[in-house]
Amino acid sequence: MKVGNKVNPSVQNLNTNTTDKLNLKSKKEPMSHAEKMGHLKSSSHVDVSERAQMMNKAKQIASQDSIDEAKVARLQKLIDEGRYNVDASAIADRLVDDHLSTME
Image (cartoon, rainbow, N blue to C red):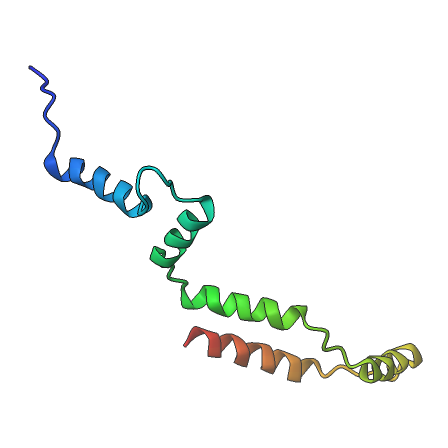
């Protein structure tokens, strides 16, 4: 089998088109790194899944300082005194409800 040197014209055009897009200035003045990065940013596109967006939102919410110090102190006092009661049935019901709502 003989291998030739013919290059597919669409591939050859692809290379020159890419070079032309990145080198918008004349050959005497090459693009700076910042200009190249600006061009790449304007032509870039990223799709982020809904799940990834939800994970990012959860991470932002978790990183916020939203601790109710008064509530923590009150609950700590009840626990220390042995007066904090846990309603296991209510917790189990809530866990099941939450799980079922995520499956929908």
